[in-house]
Image (cartoon, rainbow, N blue to C red):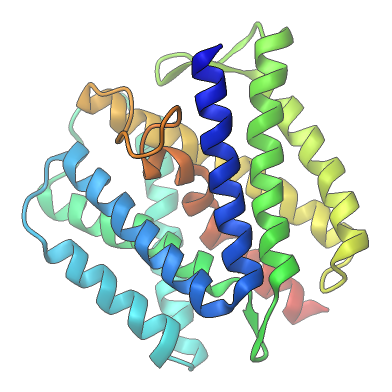
Amino acid sequence: MKELLRRSLTGIVYVVLLLSTVFLNSDAFDFLFMAFGLGCLYEYKRIVGIKGYYIFIAYLALWWAYIYLIHDELPVLILLAITLIIDIALLFFLFSKKKKPFSTIHLYLIGIFYISGGFIFLTMIPYNDNEFAKLLIAGIFVLIWVSDTFAYAVGRTIGKTKLFPSVSPKKTIEGSLGGLIFALIAAYLLSMIESKINIAQWIGLAVIIVVMGAFGDLLQSKFKRMAGVKDSGAILPGHGGIWDRLDSLIFAAPFAYFTLKLFFYVS
């Protein structure tokens, strides 16, 4: 009971913090996710065992360049393509039985593009035509939260069939389907609030975010299992580390950004 209370209080503070920065101003939103990115990189670096601080410098340079300096479409598409390729390659790693498939260089590249790229595209999602789409990015957060919450609740209630026991023994297929169904309901409701994308696009976006978010969660679990740790950190009471809390979001973000680009292009 005490652990549930602590987890709930931390979750409430986290949600209030995120939504406050979204609706306060875009600079607060940018700074928060830049800081979250540094926190995730620190936890990733510690878990995979890479040394030095070059990865932080690379992240800050990329983040600053793409958020504030680069306005041309081509460099953004190049970074997006590399990030998606790295993420898709990581899905092969997720289902691989190899214990140590990565060299030090590979681990640096994964950190730069999987984590750094995830935060860069997450930060870029609400910016379109010189406008900060508050309701759109808030809606994406809601989809992730609804999916995670109901996947946990449904899994605890009726979950019996293990989803991926070798990586995450507690996750069930029933829970994952429950999370998806409730996220689709949330997407329908969000389409009544935010009209930048239509109901069909909200539904499609929800599917992409929930599916890719689930892969992101499993991927982070595999990194932790290989390192022999339960949590990536302890900064969030009841939730573990920042990477534990944002694993779904940072993996899904580049796919969501790509999906939204397609929607705006064909609309």
